[in-house]
Length: 147
Length: 479
Image (cartoon, chains in turn cyan, yellow):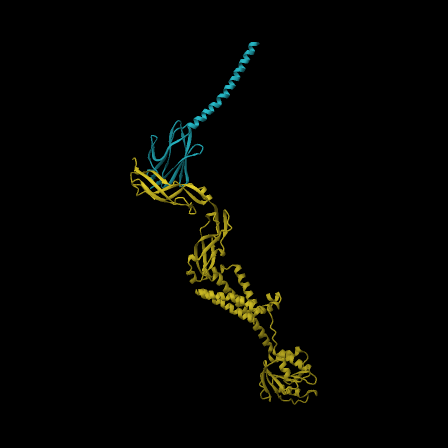
């Protein structure tokens, strides 16, 4: 009978201990996570308009592109990337939305790009708005397509 | 020709016909009410002035048409003031039915009526009288001692001729037409023996002339006051005016004269009615159809009395198409600057405002008439004026020399403050420069570019730069 009581008491103590430690560890974990996010915030390291991207390197970064090259790319390099996420490249031709590309980023750092094929009607001023998954604007690249 | 006529008549609306008929009737009634008055003569003069004015407009005589127009306008006022008593007497003397519909009858006493009245007056006073009314035959050989008078027939004249103290009262008076030709005339006496005993010399004289001529002789007996008429070989007493008038009318052939007078009056009225219709039709054509020369102008709409806090951000149209009519010479001389379309924004509010374009909004040169405005309504959107800082972007055009790329650009200022309508600026994210050409850019350097503010209602805020300084880097591209 006494053994049985001791056993129940032991189980109760174990349960209390478990509950105590569980409630103590969760807030700590969250605090660490928040600290990590602040320190490792998704950061745009480099962005540029270019004629092409080879081996994650933008080729011929410029602000004016001839329509003859047939394609123009928006290169963006993020460092760090705390977690797998995605960003947007929103392309505007003369303030009119042209296309919106969703690009995935992988930790710890990631370079990605979007491109458009050029047509005769695409001449004029352009801009690409780079924004995070929540739509927060990170950077605006302005360029022109000319003859 | 037939088609032209058909299209012309086809273009006339029922309202036009009513318009012409109504005004024609008004003019006709004015004639009926005011004819043979001074007002009518002056109105006729006024109408002539108006016709001359229209001719002057047609010929392009600007000053003459202006002067005549002014005189016509002033004269209309003067007529009302000067002839107010005459107008009042005409209008007051008649009831509404007489003004709108009736025809005033002229009460002009005829010669027969005067003779009858005179004879009745003489008869009542027992004044003997002898009146000769010749027919076709000449009486010169049959009568003598007459004194020429040639006076108009009147009751007073006839009565005084046969008044007892008048030296010629014993003789006869010869009436020819509406005049007393001779008085104191001695007539041949009848020698008939079958005449009643009460017949005196006056009766015998009457019958004597009647027997020898076709004249009709009226006798008023001094003793009895009876009235007798001698014609041919008969002499008979007259009872009542009706019979007397009938005898006189038969003798003088006045039935035809009376009918002629009435016909003449009817003819006058008919001519007046026709002239009224023609005159009003002419006026109507002059105002509406007569102005055949047309011109169409595109006139920019101007806005006045705008609240300085508001901005016109949109308008359904910026120009208004105006069809103008007038004489050829005047139309040719019209310059677009002389025509203005002004809209008052004094009561306009933020948002959409609708304005109707009427004659009041359009300023035209003299002698030019508005026929049509397209559109007749303008929608104007007003907005509150605000300031906003907007990024600048260079609008590059052209082509760089081969092998070169424009790798970097720095410009100052990167943003400018713009003043404009709230609705426009809320949707505006970029201000572009004017086009910057690339052809001559072979090496790195700097340049300046103006801003291209679109829409034009936007303005650069005071203190903001209106020129952008551009520093650019040119380098060889990687093949």
